[in-house]
Length: 172
Image 1 (spheres, rainbow, N blue to C red):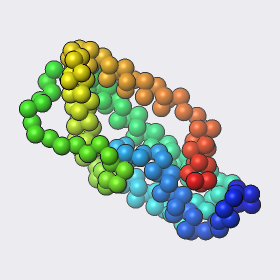
Image 2 (cartoon, one colour; image 1 turned 90 degrees about the horizontal axis):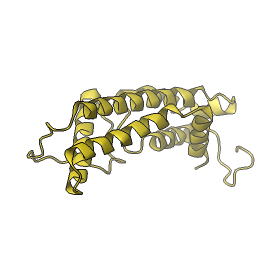
Image 3 (cartoon, one colour; image 1 turned 45 degrees about the vertical axis):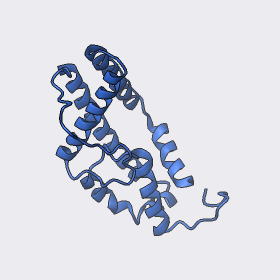
Image 4 (tube, rainbow, N blue to C red; image 1 turned 180 degrees about the vertical axis):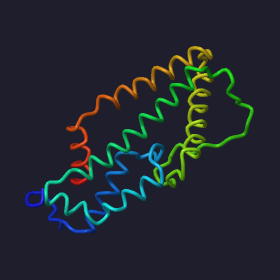
């Protein structure tokens, strides 16, 4: 890439910063899994990803990806557990808002903030299915199937997928 990419770009701290931002954007575009503390921790790579690439060191990419996968698996497991417990107790009478276009949203400060976001997202998905004339049980089953499939896909990701995501972030 350094020699044959159609754009001749310097491997420097500026590239490292852009790569980190793009990689995080590609992994978590809705900013609904990673926490601000994760982003702060990854800041150590902001000026070193270029050096790691020069040394063919993919450890930073895998460190970031592993954390993302942990957060994503934990979140999906929480949602599945919530759905397994039932959705009959959801309160749709409350006036609530949820921003579904979160690409420019701030990263969540903590798990409690993400819990609130996901509670609202689950409620929105539930309400949409109920408004599409699905019964409460059909809605629960459809959502369970959706989130179980997502979790299964997360568990099937391998090192080649990580490499591809990272290289896509670099080349773009």
